[in-house]
Length: 401
Ligand SMILES: [Zn+2]
Image 1 (cartoon, rainbow, N blue to C red):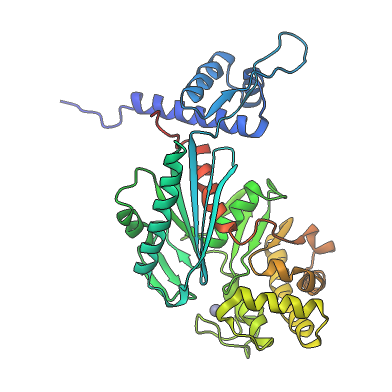
Image 2 (image 1 turned 120 degrees about the vertical axis):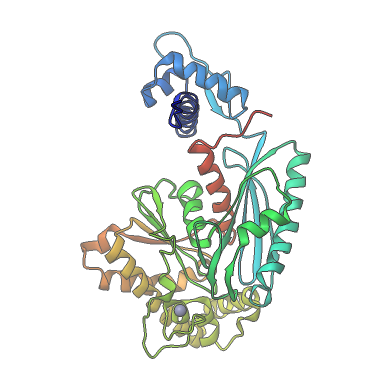
């Protein structure tokens, strides 16, 4: 008897349909409000197929009719928009000094944003799993009360994260080989939605690419300005992780062979000479309570305190050397400074710009601009939610409940 393990029919039909549903969903996300005819025109699918796919998306409550019509030649058309109301995507950011949780609906509307302090440097991965699981359960309960189905959870961590969600090394948290994704899934007791773990800079870059003021910029680099400094890299419209997912570790490029010791054990890494720890150390402030100390740095800078201004200029020049490396290597349209760099940006940016222009071989720094993020401290958490929405957009659609 010949058995075929490759008989493709049913699976392929389902795959094609799922792919086309995702194509139509993305089209609505990009063009809403839009008509079925608009979708047919923008996707190349025929009108009958689009009507059938739209009906399916309406059944799944991913898309709804607004009843609005546009004045145009011919019959007025029923317009379609995303229907966010029955769903939620959850993002969490674990950092050295805080945990942030964010939930958004399908259209990206923020449903909640929670932040609590967290002693990351002295917390084991197992303790972090318990903390994050408790927060996530509260978010899930809140979403259940609003009768929303959770589409997924993505957690950002400042460290190297393998494709399976294992945190290989997180120097500032002191973790090695922590199966965060597996342990968190267990702690949530099979939550009924996918759990993912990713590098915090990667997620923050996704947040900027989907929700930021420069959303849609094809070539964008996000620099985390936390105790650690990492880069999230979007090139040609896609997040780039590298071979094993460990790209973007600009924080550990050596800027000064005689520089301060980094948490990774090496000398003069970018994050040791241009991270927030360097700002606080130069200013003789303790990095224990970063936010409180940072307020003090901002106050002193506003008062034109010479030591503070000199510290910020030094750190800004070091950071600018790193930004120039990014500009020479990747030629992004924008480098976005996040985290604790945001309140310090007025004093850091002039030095960063000077180094960028002085060290980039392309004229006008290859068109690269440097801006401070407007997404706030929870950018990576928001990016976690963006990653969940990305999976929906690429075809992982919720089941009809
Ligand atoms: Zn280092």
